[in-house]
Length: 188
Image 1 (tube, rainbow, N blue to C red):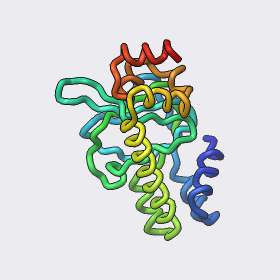
Image 2: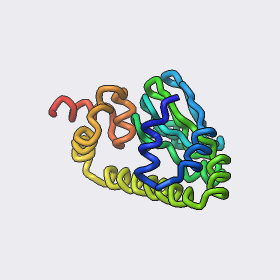
Image 3: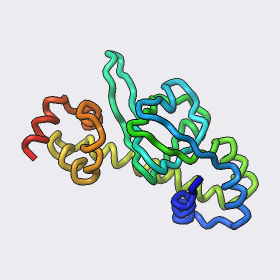
């Protein structure tokens, strides 16, 4: 298991002692998932935090009409951290592997144990919660834009999504019809 990128990520968010890092690394696991596997289904407890070493993942839900709505994407070197999982509340979302993925995982139970044992872990958790909140804000800001600006902003900030993700999923993320998204792609 190659934890170099994860350790770099952690050190960017909190200074942790070598003893703590050794304890943390002993609790990490590496997991592999194939395309279209569901990591979590709505109503289940998310019991782990994930570092996406390689791959592509999304969150989505179904509305009362049965329509699918994508709410978030994660790419390589992202952390999948959720309020629901951290606070042991069932998830609202499905989490799907879009591209074969390698994940480094840590159970929320282990995270809580590390937090009780090592006070600096609380600053890491705080930074993860703030990062999650900032990502939520950025998603809300994107959705508040006029339709074509949503498309242009996403295409500019995350061009890889358009190479790897089916148009219907991107359309659901941008709150557009597939036809409207196709028209914007053709124009740009």
